[in-house]
Image (cartoon, rainbow, N blue to C red):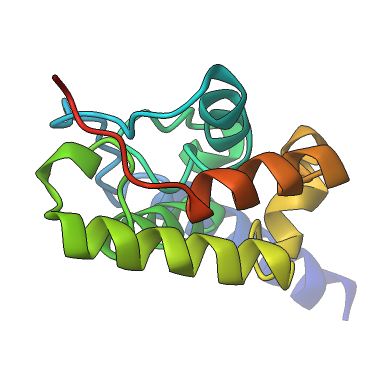
Length: 146
């Protein structure tokens, strides 16, 4: 029985080593432009949202270890498809307004940031002041470049 367990552990270890060579696409490209907002809003968005919802992702060490890396990259890719702050300037005014409304909804109901993200990034937790700042920004008229 001990020999069987040692064999199984050895096989699992080799599989773990082997899956490290399966490539994942961790990308950070240039965006078209961030939202125009106050310094407080920018800081809050960067601290709580940009790791997933921008092309400025800070890839943590576990994003390089399979199979966890597969989940991290998939979550970031999905988040970027839904909302990418780095490409905010490319969204038309209607889309920006809809995105602001959605940001208000998901932050007010604490659906974002995700609980498992907060577990590893406690600094991303939104305080009452952060919520107030974001609420004011989402309710204000969109700013444009002059």
